[in-house]
Structures are given as C-alpha cells and as structure tokens.
Length: 302
Image 1 (cartoon, rainbow, N blue to C red):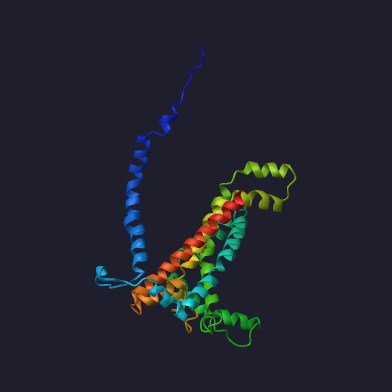
Image 2 (image 1 turned 135 degrees about the horizontal axis):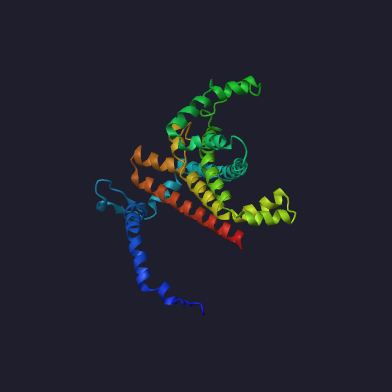
C-alpha cells in the first residue's frame, strides 16, 4: 500500500489574502501606536523648530534652529548632556552585575527562590518610596554615614546628596540598585531557555565551566543581552524619577539630566519651545545609542 503524498502550494503561504488578514489583525495596534506614539513624537519634533504658543498650536511661529542655538548657549543644558552621558556608566555595570547574579541564582541551591525575590523587591517598589528611603540613608546623620564611621572609614559625614561632586553618582547608584532585579529576571529567563544539549556536549568534550559560559552561554544569550542593554541604555537616557524625588536637580544643578532639564524648562520655566528642543535632543541621542547597540550585537553575531 503506497503512502499518501502531500504537496505544498508555495503560493498558499504568501497569498495576498494572508497578507491582508495579517494587516487586519495588526491594524488596531498600529492605529494605537499612530495616535499615541508616532503622532505625538512627530508633532513634538516639528514644534521643536517653532516658538510654541501653548494655547493655540496653529499660532506657533517657525524659528528654525533658534531653539537649539539657545540650548547650546545654555550652560545648564551642556551640564545636563554631560550628566546624562555620565549616567550611561550605569549600563555596563548593571548588565554585568545582573548577568552574574542571574547565573548565581539560576543554580539549583537551597533558598534561591527567596534570594531571587529579595533582589526583585526594589523593582516593584514605588520610586517615591525608594527615593525617600535612600534619602534617609544618604542623610549626613543617616545609616550609611554612621556605618562608615563605625567602621572607621570616614572622619566626617559625607554629603551624599548635598555635595555637588558626588550627588549624581549617589542617584546613579539608586538607579543601579533599583534596576538590578529587573534585568536579573530577564537574564534568568534567557538562561533557562537555552538548550542544555549544547552545554552537555561541551562537557563531554572536556570544556571547563568558564569555557562553557564564555563560548556557549554568552553567544546564545545574545538576544537577551541586546534587549537588556537596549532597555537600560534608554532608561539611563531618560533618567528622571530618581532625580526629581531625591535631589530636584540640585545641589547647584549638579544632578540635572536631559530629561529633567526638559521637564524643568517646560513645567517650571514654561519655556515649551526650549523644552521640546531638549526632548528632541534626548530622542536623537537615544536613537543613535539604540542603533549602536543593534550594530554592536549584530557584528558580534557574525
């Protein structure tokens, strides 16, 4: 008895009806993106080149690059750019720490679920609560200074949030502490999705633990690395909440980031033209950094 044969019709898989059906399913999501993402971004980018009349946008006047020239002449904006670039130092540190932590807590050891939960708690904690808590700890008579004094590491209290030389780094540490558990969970998910057969084959070939991690685990984890690096880069570019809650941009403007500068110009100084221009700069730098991330990981994947 001959076996039945089945012939596939290639045109069946790429017919215009299938394409139309796919676009039909995508249409609601695309419409929402168009209305609440693409349209506001496009409108904001256009208004960055105008003198904005907030009460009547149609009366806004085209001024070309004047808003960007005003930004360039503002030393606070330049300081914000520098601070934002410094803030990006959080990205490699948090990714390395989160990956190391994920490898550690992915092991089948006692109490690891409790360990994972402890690191994830800051992620689900309100940034207001986090800011207030670390504000107390950073206080000159707070727990951190008292601990360092007890260990005889300092002779006088450190102004973690009042010293303009270190205030930004104090805020950056809170961002690191708060985001560590989030990226740890993403890396755990990535590690648990990797096929174990490849690593088992490497073990049979005599590869040690470091060789298996560096030559097998890391390359296969590249999509997760790209996702986490991209998310943390964009989060660092938009650093805002911790600054608002903990320092309000002070002391002496030393913790101004680009996002906080845009907020300050728009909702404190009511200079919406300059705020929109600053937002456009944030978006442009974020786009460039995202492109670099994609290029870097694509090159590494060849």
